[in-house]
Image (tube, rainbow, N blue to C red; front, side, top):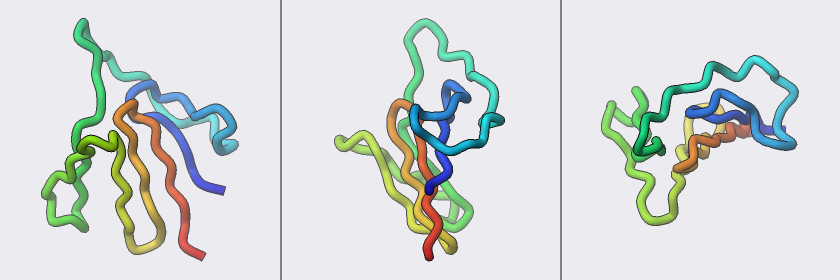
Length: 79
């Protein structure tokens, strides 16, 4: 299955992968925080806006990364 987690909370998604070392919670501040854009070396450093859908899918060399506005993500390897 896919690797899953959350970029903001550092916690895994319900029903996600078995990795329990996903990360450390970020400080969101008084106005809350959300993911607005994603950038990658493979995308030449240009941010990809999440837009109205609130998520973005990026096909990389080895799989697809999906990042959502709430910080949740999944990475699915190509077969």
